[in-house]
Amino acid sequence: MSEDLCERLQDVNEAGAYRLSCPLAVLEANVALSGLTLFDADLAAVQGKGEFLARMAQVLLAPDWFGHNWDALADVLGDLSWQPSAGYVLLLCNGGEKLGLSDADYAGVTEIFNDTVRYWKARGKPFWVFFA
Image (cartoon, rainbow, N blue to C red; front, top):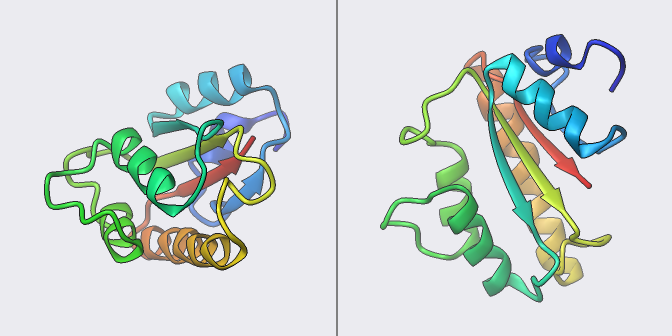
């Protein structure tokens, strides 16, 4: 991410999953300026799928129907009707290389994130995932 981060965050075509390359404060300020919604997840205490899904439900303010499984996470990320916005930024902090997940679960959630980015791009909204 370079000097005009605010504009880049609004660019649907650039949205995707990236390792964060700027200070957290810079990202947070630019997300606020861009009018996007920031979901900030500290994963330091996460160990395994159940804790990861519980943390995501908390951060995303998931509705009561959230089923605490991968399909439910995909459904929530593809809905977000309770959080209307011009776009979304999911910031995953302190998760280590695999976000506290097994290899298989990490591969699965990575696929969910990539599918979510594509889903929102098709609707003209940026969805970003940053690993910090």
